[in-house]
Length: 151
Image 1 (cartoon, helix red, strand yellow):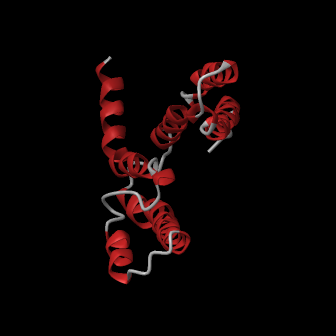
Image 2 (image 1 turned 90 degrees about the vertical axis):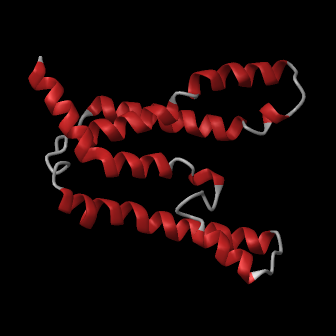
């Protein structure tokens, strides 16, 4: 696939926006003063960063020749997405159990088993809609192709 420079530009802007959102989260929990208003104003521009990442992913998926191939989806794309997601979720759950000094193995196993239904760590929330986008990408491709032929 050819490199699309405006996509790279959008990625850079979105990365900076996500960094700004994470860096300013603590300030927005503080009492309201001038700096709070400034940070709030700046983060209002950065809130579109995550949706832009989703749009970039959707655009690249729908413009890929292999999106219609379900074998590629299940054998290559989803494993590359799901395996690191589950590994990092488990690492987060175990890490937080050490930090919070939770010595309950049953609770740890329940948290790990609940990963398919809820994030092991809140910062991984975006993976759930991302997985859905991947799973439904062949259907979305069919819908967009049919829409183009109707015109």
